[in-house]
Amino acid sequence: MKKLIRIGTRDSQLALWQANTVKDKLENLGYETVLVPVKSTGDIVLDKPLYELGITGIFTKTLDVAMLNGSVDIAVHSMKDVPTLLPDGIVQTAVLERASPLDILVKESGANFKKKCTIATGSLRRKAQWLHLYPHHIVVGLRGNVNTRLKKLRESSWQGAIFAKAGLERINVLPDNHQNLDWMVPAPAQGAMVVVALEKDSFSVEATSKLNHKDSDVCTCIEREFLRVLEGGCTAPIGAIATINGDLIKFKGVLFSLDGTNKLEIDKSISISRYKGFGRNCALEILTNGGQELMQQIKAETK
Image (cartoon, rainbow, N blue to C red; front, side):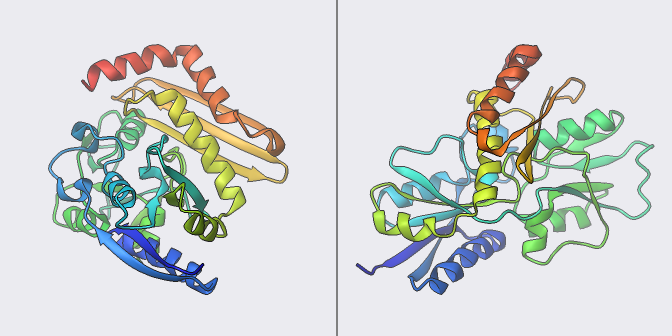
């Protein structure tokens, strides 16, 4: 049976780039596709930090609804935006080969971080890690799509703003005045794109499964499992990165207090054949060694 695969996507430049990448890959395999752009609440409400909006999967919920009501067949997301528990009836079918997971700082020329500076980000994780290294700095909120945030930075008096490198590279807006933050542990699955489909739609599931990149799938699975077990439904400053080197998977995970003063970290390696449950075990180790109390503190502070 042949059918047209309707690809749901947010309508930002980056989201459309990602959806078009999946569209091209599917069409190269002989499938017929069409893009169906929609606008999410996360793209509309820009005057509040994401954690204050209190919606799990704010960038993905609209597409979930569109899939469940039959308006689209599949959806393409930045994987770091996707809740670790998908809605009933929706399944992950493919993780595309991961781009750079790094965070970067786009900075004002001549900025001296030894002095008091103002840095912009809408991420609790980035804010906590920045303040851990630069406790004398001020971190302000920054929302909007990539182009909107770059424009706000240019028009501001800030000394810099933090972005995911992959997003800026994908739409060719990576400024020359950027610095790789290789000391900052990225968000779980940062740099990866994921495809989801209705579980009962065997045609779309089979078609998109052909796009899966095994190593990227394994690494993001570990990172998101770490996030799911730690988070417990609460938004928190959590970073995780897994990398494959030969037969080994190296993993680093962190949990910070909101102000960055308290840091819990785990750094471990395991055979790739034993990766299942690895993220969960790392999260449990963090929780046992002070993480449970820190998560309770974060929940109390974000109520």
